[in-house]
Image (cartoon, rainbow over all chains, first blue to last red; front, side):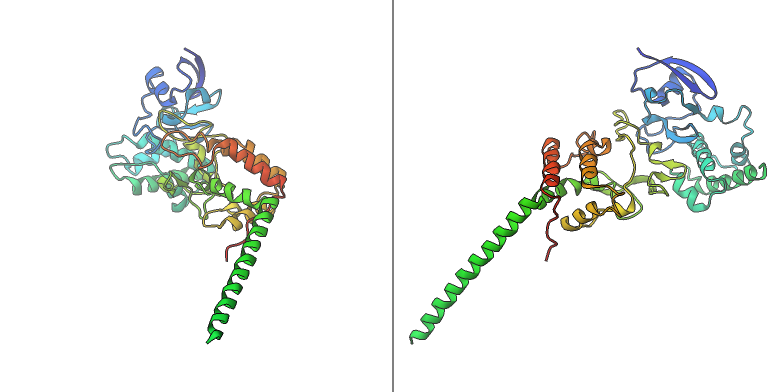
Length: 155
Length: 194
């Protein structure tokens, strides 16, 4: 089986997998990074969202062979101690209910704030297409604004 | 009493002459279309108007998807550079190849065509003129258009679209021949309807 040296959360992680194995399987089953969730498996719900070179990617539909040396960031790599502005805002705004989709939400939000530092409601609606069965959308939006303001204040 | 018979014969003769004239006109138009490549374009347009092509050449700010050309799921939008919204690019889901396990289609530089190349709702004649208009087509010459339609990985993807997607109605090899023949005969456009 082919071997892949992945750059995950700033560390080199070597793993074996078939080239077309979705990155999500490798993250969860080989590397034991289970914060990234399996939701639908067809890139529709966004629960598996990670960042690759800063961009949002649905890892259930991304073959491990396509990663190369690009920087993969999962929810475990957002911060070492839950101190990222998004994580603090998520707690402050009490966003999650069941929580299953939230790691994907956070990684999607992180990609958005990389591209637009102070997004409008419309920017958030266009970028965060993740699905939440608990219906936390309005609090997700509120927390993204909150995190954006925190990050902006740090500049 | 003979007058109506004469008149009827004259009318019949006139109708025959008119029919002959119309048929000759049609033949001439057909010959012109063949010599200019317009006839080839009418067939090429069947491909360009198929969901595999036109889903990413929409008239609005949302791509379409599926054989029924429904508006793309998840409120996907064009974005400022035709690659999706900031934070939600086409490449969030679409990679370099079709993904078998998820069924998500993919090809190199997956993206929307620019608004200037919106084809949705155009007649064959309008589509042809839009395609040839260098102010709309990214400055492409006829040779560039032939290259795009015969070599571009995203165009070629149309004939290998993965699960639950029907390829265009003309076989790829035949499409390549039609495009080359269209260009070689002058890249003519069909007449506007009416």
